[in-house]
Length: 400
Image (cartoon, rainbow, N blue to C red; front, side, top):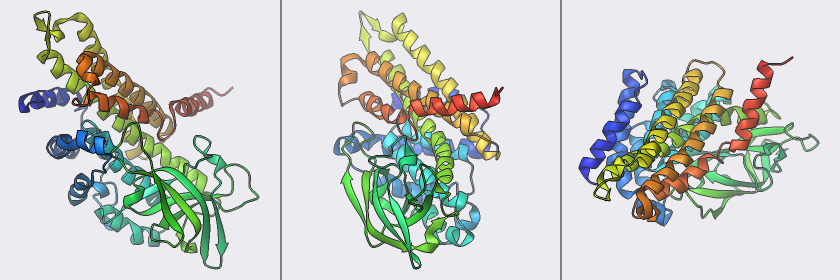
């Protein structure tokens, strides 16, 4: 794309993303949009091809204070809200969802459990390093035999004196290679059933018995770091227990609620990026003697994309605002994540169709958006799980 078409794409986005943001939120959005266009988009295709982690961009985001923006000021963070965080993820994902999810996982999953359930000592020990980007945090819930059924956690942690001894495996862990710590679920009461008897434990990645497994070769989000974690008699201090023993499962479910806002924001970015590219291309590409944007079938696709993106943005931003206000947001987070993720897949598909044969080529960004969008319907709970969560909440409201 030329610089001129990039500017046109930016103008379109400005119209549809204000939604009464305050001055700080607008500043964050505009700063990250500019950063994404200049620092991330030019190398996004190359990083995807090589499955190479966007370390340079992540380092610069850390220097800008973005990786600690949701951490309170007293722990070295920016003290900003979740909507500002969602804006960052959305704008990064608009050009590179791999960068977007790397930031989303670092804050929404790596930092959030410690913020919610950490003791004052734990917060003082870990949050400053996470806030500055000295290292990233990661989140270890999924296992080979425990995906959507996370209550089937098989990893165990046994107390031996003043240490936990951990054995098991975690799978599909984002940022694993670059994490300084990972908060995991482990079964601390072997006699318990299902989600009972599971605890949350913070594991420094330099702990003895901790190692990285296979790097995943993925369909999409290829530049994000995704690996297996292996625990073989891994020892960490007993003080690394996060919250009360055997109560880790609710902590992780609450963490996932917030994570769904960030995945919804990532999906928004993919959808908006798809529209950005499709609307510009439709005006540049001529067939039958005129730009293809003049054909009603193309205009209909653009109209559907813009309408669905606007609706999805309202849902995701609303969930973020509820969280910032300290109000219940679980149902709304699931609604936003569900709708935005399915919108992202539809928009990416439309964008490829508008590009025609060129859309199928890796020289253009839209085929990458198409592959990346699918993760949004799987990560932080599949679309099927979101519908279960939403239906359960609705039935509670109408309980007879």
